Length: 343
Ligand code: DON
Image (cartoon, rainbow, N blue to C red):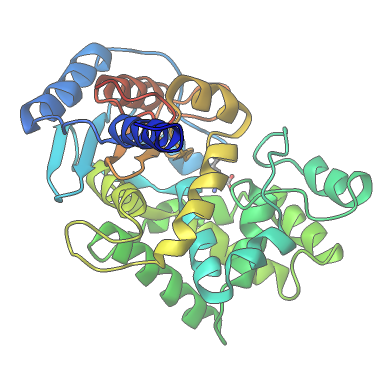
């Protein structure tokens, strides 16, 4: 070895070390996946914390005991526990997929430029956040996962008529779930009759140019998208399609452009659990999204998509049991993408 080759050998050794460190963990066995899901179900099935949302009257009537868990891996294998048949309304989880649809149609900058990609630090239905964005921050400093940004995103979906826009949203969601989804009419009517606050958000968005036209049509379509009926398995399939580069791992269909997935996950990580998004990320590292119907989806990129449905919510509007169960399952399976991988 001479003085010239020595540094090269050092570099090779360093490169080899880096490659070895980055090598993927041996995947867990199916039994380990099922055991993690079963353990979370057993641990939390009798937990009685939280309460159903009741500001949308129909949600107060949903069975508080529904508790369904589903996890989907890259090979399309499904691991479940509890009640995976009972359906709840998708609510705010829908916002992820409408945002993805706008990105699909207009590119990721369209969301960034019109709505923003920052936490508002305010409640999900805050009107002050629009006012502050416009008057305090001078532009679109919201995100597409709080109501103001979500209603603006819905207004951006392409289509000539309400029917055309709605059909394209519903079929987009259905592709993610891998089956035709439908609206829960009772929930839609109930929210449409009580959504004056969202109507105010629609109008204020319009006044400031975050919505370009027909703010009440956008608010109404947004209300309908929140009323789509899903079970834990549907939501897990939707999460898994995000976990595996925009491809539904069961149907094999590429449901969104893979290059847009990182931006979708980034907004979920920033604002998916509203005021508690930071705490959630701190505990799990997972991009996720909650809905006041009681569902939460979470994504471990390249590893699994997971969803839990359990209607009782905490004060921030996130399902109590779903947060606990997903955190336990993910931590048991090494799902945190920020965690160093042991060898
Ligand atoms: O607009 C609303 O208030 C509901 N349709 C959705 C809110 C929601 O799911 C917030 N979730 N945590």
